[in-house]
Length: 232
Image 1: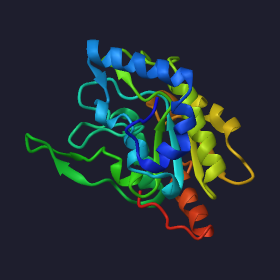
Image 2: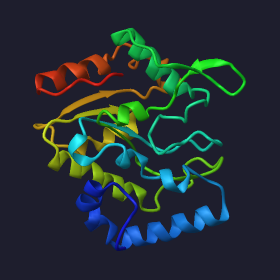
Image 3: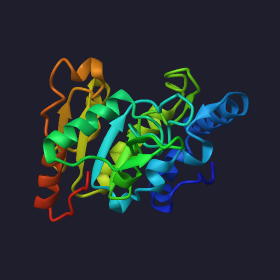
């Protein structure tokens, strides 16, 4: 595998992964899936998380599990949906906690029918240095977890280890058991790790999500490191 269409700094840092047998097999699998089925995100958005947030700009990492598998939702950023798409339940709870924590709300837009709704695209976060990383970067339409255990997890674990090793001061937001399991890949003496339950209604409504104050705590730590806080 000579070259992947990904932002140059990530291309350099991850070239060793692209050259491994597992990634060659993963690439073959993904191409077959996209040629025979409708898959998400669109092919040119698979590496959006990286293309919008170069290695030297990473200040925060949020770890998700799978892309959304409904039409028009996924845009290559965990928890994010494309502008104009109704908010999924987890994102609703994320925005509720942001409002309660720091008092801000997302931009209000109008859809094609003139209805007002919140903008669920988190590109604005990515462009400020938030790496919105799903553990699995692709999925078949309406078939959750269909691209798990095909090699993506090995690749994204390597991404987490790369950030931990190469970046000086990063906040890792680990929401839910799956993300919290990635703690083992992070240098805990060097970076800040904030953990909580997942923001999905099933987990959040049991307690532990609302009131975690991850967004203000993240920004406070970034400022202590001399870094510009995130405009959540």
